[in-house]
Amino acid sequence: MLWADNFITDKGDAYQNYQSPLYPMGIDDQLGEAFVTYSSPHKQWVFDSGINGVQVPNGIYNNGEFIPRGESGLILDFDDGRVIFESSFGANNNNLTAAYSVKDFNWYITNQTEEQLIVESKFDSNGRFKQEQSGIPPHKQVVPAIFVNPELVQNEPFAFGGEDKTSTSIRCVVFAENTYQLDGALSIFADSKNEVFKKLQFEDYPLTEYGDVVDFNYTELLDTKPKDFFHVENVTCSKLSDRVAKNIDPSLFIGFIDFEITNLRFPRS
Image (cartoon, rainbow, N blue to C red; front, side, top):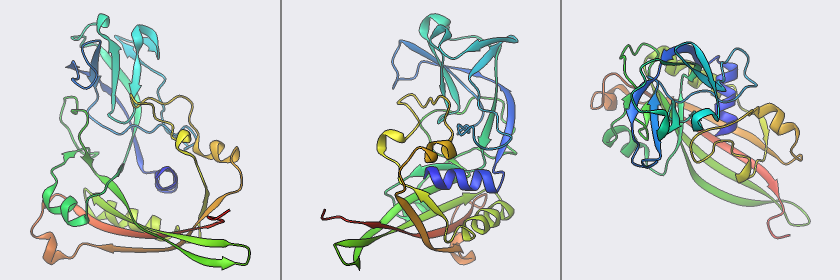
C-alpha cells in the first residue's frame, strides 16, 4: 500500500495543497479525556516528504504564531487530518490554522468484498470541491478512496534448490468523485506493470498509533533496505458497469484494479 500510495501521488500529482482553519472537535472517546482534538475539513494528509511540491507540516499556527510538534503535547494526526493537544491546551480555540497536502485518494486495507463496499458502505466526502466549513469526524472512511484487499496467495516452484515464486492477487476498489479522476487513477496504475519495489517490514510502517509521522521519505527508506524485490507481474483495470452503477450513490464513480504481485523466495529454508 505504501508503494501504491507513493506511485499515484508522485506520478499523477494526486494531491492538493491547502491552508485551512482547524475546528474544535472536543474530546475523542478513543483517546480519552487527557486529550483534545482539532480537525481540518480534509483527510488523509500527505506524509511522504519525498514527493515534489507537497506540504508536510511539522506544526500548526495559533493566530499566526507557529506551534511546533510537541509543544502543549501537539501531535499531528495525518491519517485523520487533525491535531491532538493535551487537555490543558483547551478545547475551544478558534484561531488555529494548518498548511498541509491532502491525498486525492485515501487508502484503506479491507477484508470486505467489493459488493459490501459498493452497496452496503456509507462514506463521508473528502473531495477537492467540498466547501463545508467544519472539521471532518475522525475514524471514518472518506472518499475519494482506494480500498486494498489481498485476495489470494500461492506458491509455485521456480528454480532448483527450493526457490518458489510467490504470487499475490490484490484487488483494489477505486471510489472517485468524477470520471476524469477515475480514468486518471486506472490509467496510472495500468502503466505500473513491471514496476518493482522492495520488501518492507511491519516496523517500517511510518504512522504511530496517533497517526503521526516524522521525516518519512519512501524513496530514501527503500535505499536503506536489502535487495528483496516484489514485481508487478500484471495489472488489469476495469470500471463498474452502468447497469450496476444505477443502484448505488450517483456521486461515486467506481473502478477496479487487479494486481498480480510476485516475489522469489525460499519458503522452506
